[in-house]
Image 1 (cartoon, helix red, strand yellow):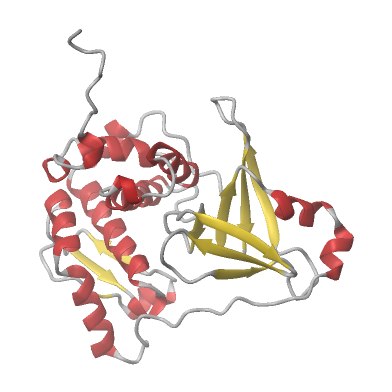
Image 2 (tube, helix red, strand yellow):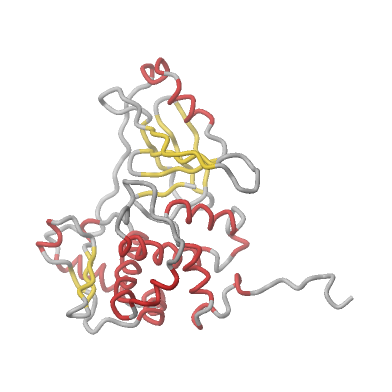
Length: 286
């Protein structure tokens, strides 16, 4: 499973070729490349942690690949590249090709088109059904917030959500940001709900992940992860890994995702979601 730019993880296969790690997403999607060595000749791969599986299966390894996190039960050449300094020295440096922003910062009309596209339609309507519709249409983030490095914000006093398409590289990223900011609306409007759900949820363990040591941001990220997971599993037969294994991957990156998946499945919007359909027990009625 690979998580890029803080987004929920996607399944796929990682292949190491010379000095790069090549991730091939399952199904559609172009391969993503990550250097194994920085220009400083230091390894660009870092082992974040190893988790023992409670069921007694193989341990799960979490690696940093630049701005991405890769989780696997078979670390193979990634682990070997960390253990063998002479291998690192022999690898060529390379840099992944970055994507263009959704809109240029000077193109206000273009940014507004992107914001309208994400804030209107079935995806946005489902979020509004869960968390309510802000009093104002979703707009563009202000210069001060952009300078502070924010990609989105919810201002409770104005009941408004703002986004920055010029700082994002994909529609998946801006959809995630909209879910995250509407989760802040939920926090502001019903502060007791998440407080009740959050009992016993550990903090985020990765210091580079958004929400580290900030419970409000952590909760908003878990909401966005849960929304994404329920979207992916709306057609469970198309998911290339078992749905419970996929959810465990989400929860490793952002604890509390599973708690929120259970909560959301109990809401009217997800009444007919496939995960709510319990298969009948063949032994029942005998």
